[in-house]
Amino acid sequence: MNMDLPGNGYFENKNILPLIRVSGIAALLQLIVITVGIVITAGLGPKPDSAYEYYVMMQESKFIGLLTDDFYSIILVSLYLFTFSGLFFVVMKNNFSLSIFATLLTFTAVILCISSHSGFSLMHLSDLYWVATDETTKSGLIAAGEAVIAQNIWNSSSAFFSGIFLQGGGVLISAAMLGDKNFRKLTIFSGFIANGLDLVQHLVHYFAPSPAEIILYIAGPFYIIWFLMLSLDLFKLVKLIKSH
Image 1 (cartoon, rainbow, N blue to C red):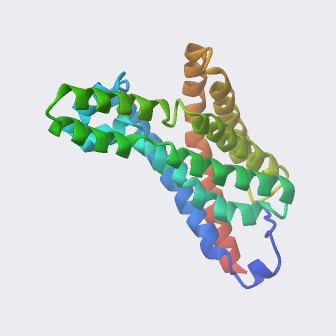
Image 2 (image 1 turned 45 degrees about the horizontal axis):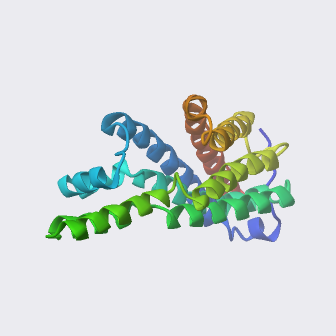
């Protein structure tokens, strides 16, 4: 397969080769994290329904508490900062407009998602709850915990828009890859399907949670394919650049 080296001076001087390598590594790490996340979700079961249940879990094991509160999802989302950093420079020659919008939306989504994660706040409130000696203080800490849960990565306005931006960015970057010989068709279409289905479920899960959950289960395997193929294409591009 003939590949088009994106950029001119960038690739002649190999200035962004480290960025592309880091993007390939980040995509591979995302593949690992999403696979581990599936195992964790299956092993730990559903999330607690209340702040008190989180406090009990945090008291027994802060590590398990963080995992149950989707800390692995925060790692997965944070890695997009690295995946898209080099990916943008690869794709921009093929479609600059779509690639810049995809990258901006994705970076914004990462910031919104991290800022709305509730794990460490619940850990702090749990510590306060178990040393509190009167019921009034404990009731206040339970109320504070419920407020934190209401603002987490699933329930807040930040969560709603971060989902739209993140999956929308994935759809846009896949569209920007169309016609780019640096990426296999499987990479492009798995990206369309994974991010597109995830975007649909994100929009409908507020009023139709059961169908949304089914859609998410369908999207999951396509995410695994996407991250795998994305890392393979980026590593292949690194070798091509080094040979020129």
